[in-house]
Amino acid sequence: MHLLKLSDPREEDVERLLDWVRARGEVRKRVDMPGECAIVFECDPGFEDPPPPPFPAGRVEILEVGTPYVLAARAAREARSRVPIRGELVVGGSEFVVMAGPCAVESKERVVRIAVAVRRLGARVLRGGAFKPRTSPYSFQGLKMEGLRRLGHAGRKSGLPVVSEVLAPEMVEAVASRVDVLQVGMRNGLNYPLLEAIGRHPARPPVLLKRGIGCGLDEFLCAADYILAGGNPNVMLCLRGNTGFSKYSRATLDLADIPLLRRMTHLPIIVDPSHAAGRRDIIPSMAAAALVAGADGLLVEVHDRPEEALVDGPQALTLEAFGGLMRRLRALAPAMDREVAGEDLEGPSRGAFADLGLEAPPLRPSRFRTA
Ligand code: PEP
Ligand code: MN
Image 1 (tube, protein in one colour):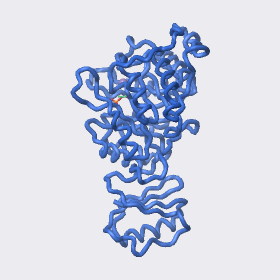
Image 2 (cartoon, protein in one colour):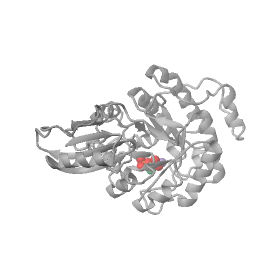
Image 3 (tube, helix red, strand yellow):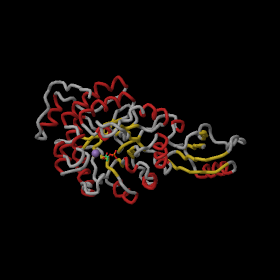
């Protein structure tokens, strides 16, 4: 497959290039992005003769891409992609961005309490499931639209952008108008109509695309291309562990795939150690390993009272454990040329707990235990 990129496109330029491509092969997709038009096409070798119509230097670039994914391919962009969230935060830059919150949105007070605490401890995005895809149809399915309202309220109270899952193409508009980042879950990682619906959303919302069940890296990047090909360049990949044979963890965290993906794609990589581990005790180790392996951020489940959590309590970090993890990440980050937001548990961040009527964590330095 080939990729032709035209920067600062004018319609007449695009038409001339499409004609040039059609004379040599087959246009597979025209992708209109802000400031750039991309044409994915198939053709025989030697197609460059004669060369494309003259354009001011540097505006047209043609690449041959030897993979089934094209727009996500590392070669498709000179620099790594940066995904802006609400104009105030960038994923894929020097900041290691932590997204944290409960698995499912629960009471209004609880989600606000968790949001305010995680923000003070360094989270930059609030997570919370409103539409929960559950294994059993009889399990709690989330608070749905009311959950999105509560999540939005907690986002405004804490000042954090919010991420929540969208389950079906017909829900994209309703969810996209209420969240800052759309999450595609593992069960939907290969749901092409959903990915296409997100790709063609005119607002080009940031997307956190989880790796689908049993999905290889080529398939994962092709899934990303389904969104990118609609003209939405704001895709973040999320590794959340692959189902394996471990008796002791929910899945096996795909840590080796972080450096592999960095070679294969320019898209930012987020790691979700919570769903990979399924148990809170090994999450700090996995999270630290993700930072060191080159991830751009984390998605992590946090709850003020995990024993009361409606979903995924065993893998929810307590606020204290989350504070300890953030502190450890801040200590590791400079070695990786990264920054991590938030306050250490000593000093002012104790207020994060006191103001909320929660017991403050002890002041001793949090010890980082490997599992
Ligand atoms: C989630 O993050 O809420 C979730 C359901 O995760 P996954 O799709 O990775 O199972
Ligand atoms: Mn969960």
